[in-house]
Length: 77
Image (cartoon, rainbow, N blue to C red):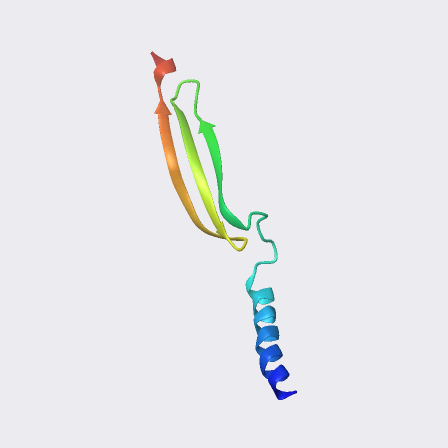
């Protein structure tokens, strides 16, 4: 009985700890990265295309990186 208490108590403590540490509104992505490309500008200004990647570990976003940025002014000539 004592061995069971020594094993189960820390395990339950860790489970409860993770329940409170993880955010209530977690992102759907558990591992890896999610990249998104956006284009702004146009008209009388240049087009700016950015690719932003968000990295996830256990549903927590730990890094956001600008991986690519292109500026296109060819339509202004």
